[in-house]
Image (cartoon, rainbow, N blue to C red; front, top):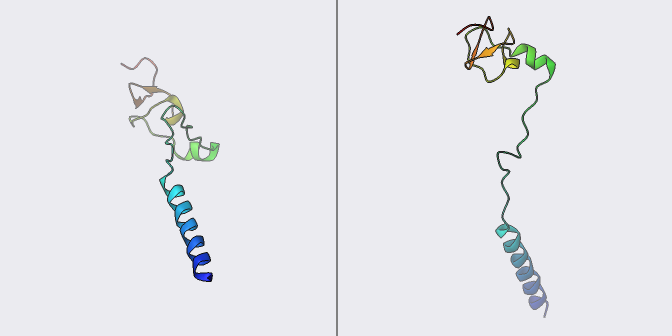
Length: 77
């Protein structure tokens, strides 16, 4: 008689495990991802020299990012 109870419990656990395994995990879209923020310490340590590639002014030592390169002057073409 206890075999039936054990069998019922095991089948219930397997059924619930299958349900949990089949649930989809939603991916965050690129628009919803948060930009990584650096602390002032790491910002100062990782500043890039003149001529290095950059994405914005905050990445360069000179604080001037022109044409995706750290620049020394604003009017450099």
